[in-house]
Image (cartoon, rainbow, N blue to C red; front, top):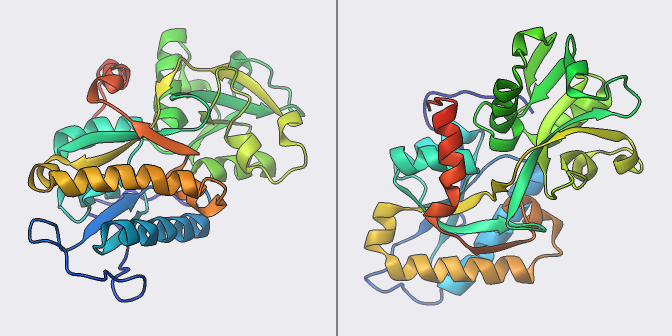
Length: 300
């Protein structure tokens, strides 16, 4: 997957109205005519598309109002879509939420859950390489996901800053656009190491073990570093939408938890949601990410 950096809203809006399950009665006057949920790229684009549509159809059945899907090409595009009120709800990364909170009035409702209610950033290299520690990255090619990716770029930047590691000592830095593409690049020899996510404290359940097409991927990869816990990525609503439609917001919020739970063995839904489940979350749980943004003096 290539990386986009659009200055304007960029994505695909999938309108389910008329092509999927329709409401059996007109929504109440206090309900919105339709809602749109935004999804970020993460793994296989086709899997994401299929999963997001399945989720939207199931929510449409529950809410009895049309539910549309917005597939963004990158983080900036989704935040812009929320800011411009083209998206009402969105799955965001922890870091993009901090920016969306300021620029688009994003309010946290839920957070994703894999094995714990937090995750990690890891830097990985192949076991077949001569890279066994962080200092071995000097003169090597390193792939990040996106400049706005919490685990795929930002937390490693905090590491480099604290350890006094100069990015300039690397031979090359590449941005893949997704965790799965970073894994493909590592397997193909395009890069020597990658910064991606992991779901456990040891870093063993990581993007490589999830996305690599190699046999026994857990035996092929070496963990060079694992970060401190990162709050799991949130599912958010625009504050102004919430203020106008609090009942619909809460109905969708709890319906989404049930839908994901019922479809937890559906690989497409899992790809779209980026987790095995969802749980309620609060704004304060993302204070560590706000501190990271401040420490790195990050700008949108």
